[in-house]
Length: 234
Image 1 (spheres, rainbow, N blue to C red):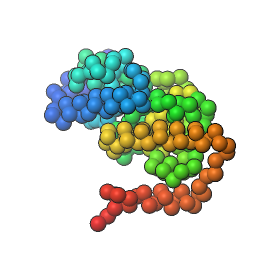
Image 2 (cartoon, helix red, strand yellow):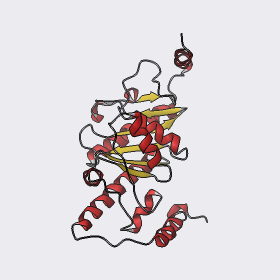
Image 3 (cartoon, helix red, strand yellow):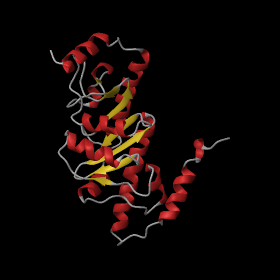
Image 4 (cartoon, one colour):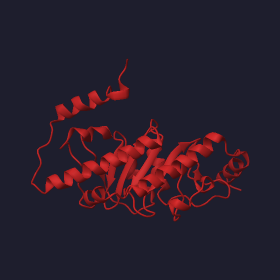
């Protein structure tokens, strides 16, 4: 028996029954996936959702309709990519979910969408530049587009990790969009914001080359966002 096989066997033995917290997180993953799908961000079975848990994550399974999911169907994937115990197969995109958590230890949720306008821009290889100050919600002066790689591959995961090092959202060429959040609701909210910005930018391009905000103004906006709303210190 190899060291890796022994480690997996030990993890299966030590894995505890679901706690209330784990069950609630599994339910939140389903609720987020349903909301994502029903809002049109990812029609049918496209897209996927995860949240950080223990040394790994809880993620939607592959190939199952969100309406048919129960808490037990959400898959725990360990930090090394193994799937302990007898579980469903995780989303084929589990690689880039894990890479996103590794790149951003401050983030606890990932929402991946195939939303219409984000996909259009991603297929054109266009990042979303600073045409509007709200681009800063993703953490920088643009929402980048990372290079294409086949879905479900470590290569795509590497691209995603680089794209999210200093951003909370990015587009994936010829694929879709990813949004991160401290919580599942925040990640889903950002995914909606990315789609709104993608649609606005797409329509703006129809009028001709857009004017962009300066680097200095975007830096000012990013700084102001740190103390905006509920982030403000009393």
